[in-house]
Every structure is written in C-alpha cells, then in structure tokens.
Image 1: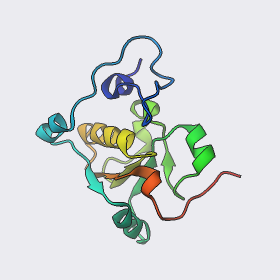
Image 2 (image 1 turned 90 degrees about the horizontal axis):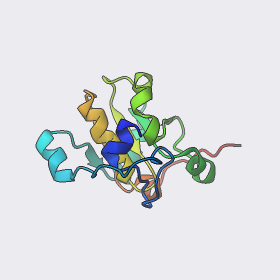
Image 3 (image 1 turned 30 degrees about the horizontal axis):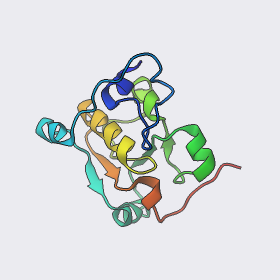
Image 4 (image 1 turned 135 degrees about the vertical axis):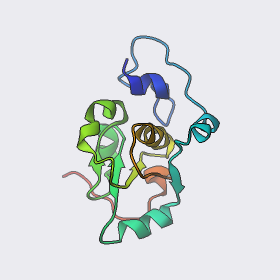
Length: 144
C-alpha cells in the first residue's frame, strides 16, 4: 500500500476501498484540524469562484484526481491534468510546485486530501474545488 493510501485511508468519496488499498487496514485519515495546525490546508474555493478563475487567460493548473472510470462516465474540466489520487506520490514531477493548482475530484473529499499532501510537499499555492465536479457549472470535456 502506498503512502497516499495509508495517509488518506485508501477510500474514495463514496467510501469504497481503492485499488491501491488491498493488503492491510488503512491508517486513520488525519483530521482537518490537524492539517490546520500544520498549516497545510488547501484553500476552499466555491464552484463560482473557480469558474471565474477558469475563464481567466492565465489560469492555474486544474488537477483531476478521480479514477479513469469516473472520467469516462462524467468527463473532466477541459485542459485539466489527470493524475488519480493513488498515483500522486509517484507522479509529482509532472506538476510544477511553483504554479498555482486547483485540485478537484467528484465531491471534494479526495481533492482536499491531495491538496493537503501537495502543500506538505512544498507546493506554493493549492486550492480545492469545494463540492468537486458535482458542483462545477463550467465546461466539461467527454472522451470520444
């Protein structure tokens, strides 16, 4: 089981076990209070705020941390980088820690966890799309 699975309990937004969590019981998920104490809580942004940011010419990186089957079913925000939650630790080199990042998932729970992890890894500016793709009112790109 990888670091992300141990840290985040290996469960998706619906509470189902992730593919990466197949061997041992998961460690307890840290509470939001402990993240606040550590100074590593991503800024929460409402979907309307994120849409305004998305429509700006110099927008931040949008990071989709959902599973591939979720993207096939629901699509994703156009131009977003897709790195499933359980792959983040091994794929950090695909992200620029000096660029602002807005992380999202389906409902905002996994993305909050990943955002906290990115801040702990030294990323300068990380925000979470509150409510995830479920709250998003902007464009969606579906795979063809």
